[in-house]
Image 1 (tube, rainbow, N blue to C red):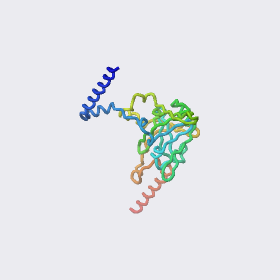
Image 2 (cartoon, helix red, strand yellow; image 1 turned 45 degrees about the vertical axis):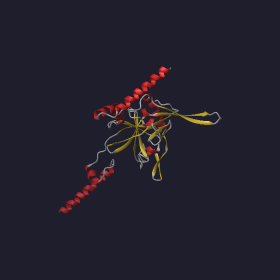
Image 3 (tube, one colour; image 1 turned 30 degrees about the horizontal axis):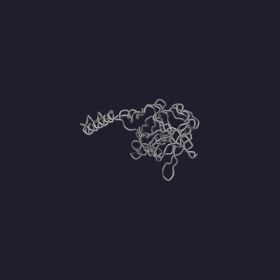
Image 4 (cartoon, one colour; image 1 turned 120 degrees about the horizontal axis):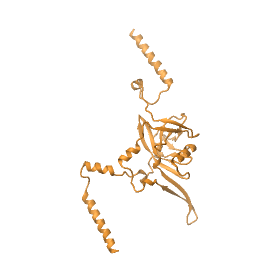
Length: 267
């Protein structure tokens, strides 16, 4: 027994000497090589109190304060599902849009989280991911921007499974405890390498997404397409989105009248 303890102590001492003797990186190539294999510690392994995230239940979706703060002036979003990539993508929209979901209330100049009832949509998500119907699932948010459009991405396969159980303590009082389970492939790793993170954060600009009506569960195909400005928009005003047909006709007549006025002036 004494020999075993002595051997462990000697190993610790040797390891300590090796670490102290190494110093920092030798040069830039040594640093870059180390970064390729270094694993970035997951946000889920750290305190996530102030991190933007969404919680899925079997009948509802709740975006936390940090998440609704990503779109501080918007209260309505499109909820898109990438079945192949196992992702949910949200993007701001108008409240009058057919597939809009109100994800926040606006009070005292800021967005406040609200519980979004979406029974059919959530049931379909649970079926897609084969989730336990009695559990909730929390996913951290990733904010990105494509073609001038801000979106937030949630990787469903990187969710934490949350169970809440009631139990009776020694004094006979009812208490609740929370059990959190992580995905199997997270075990034994701090997180992904830089290359793996870049690959998982990429949203293909030609990917097909599914818009789900949160009331009826009806599905509609949707693509993340670039919105190209017209020459007039580039010259006369900041580009801000899709123009309606009525607006296009109005602008055409407006430019025609200006052209006629210029001709008259030249005469």
